[in-house]
Image (cartoon, rainbow, N blue to C red; front, side, top):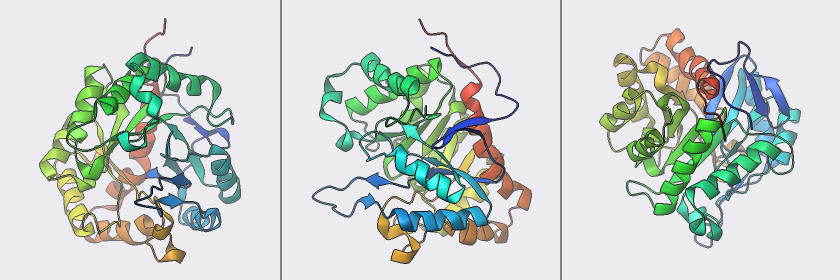
Length: 320
């Protein structure tokens, strides 16, 4: 088994859906989905499967200067790395796939019977053999799900397993704080297991109950995901703008990562949604209009995600 080195490589090589490649220059989206199936009887439309329209939008992203995105569809969410490879080859956008377990409702039944170490072993098998028969080993363990302020016991088991894997392998960890709730507890569990916060991205904190909770996560050194940008049915973008400016004024701009979390067909532009390009086309200009210098905006969407991904190599534990 490999271990993480103490320093990130001078040239950042990342495992993409089309193989290991140097991370290209440009913007990096921190939390997206390109192919997903979370459909249930209550929500039969909970899927993203219009590969043609996704490819069209990714091509637009490439023209807008987007180099890569972290694709956070994991086990139980309909992940298909083969299709991600098709999208990357067709559009030129690097796609960084993930593994892990989403929140409890989408856990496989057998997970309830597994110990923390058994869950860790499952994830390490994918790190050793690759995802979905492709041979692609993930750099990202995510999006590791939580159901909200009170985590299900199985969600806590997964978080502890993920932290143990991350201490042994060069990976980073991303979480799903459901509707922005429970992020502090997720970070606490990961830290209890010895994972350094610089290797953690707590997701959906633009939906958090208060700015103070977001500040509390960022001040510990973890990354905070403002990654549902444009989803104004959950929170207004005006609040997102205000909170981003506040985080920057607090000296925490290096902890921020941005994305849109496109997660169903109805979010695609041709089907009436905001589309993936909303972040670059609409939201970043609003940040500039709110007074953020261009250099700071570049840090949020270029430097910060690179630093986060490079953190995979910052610390490791030798496996027995």
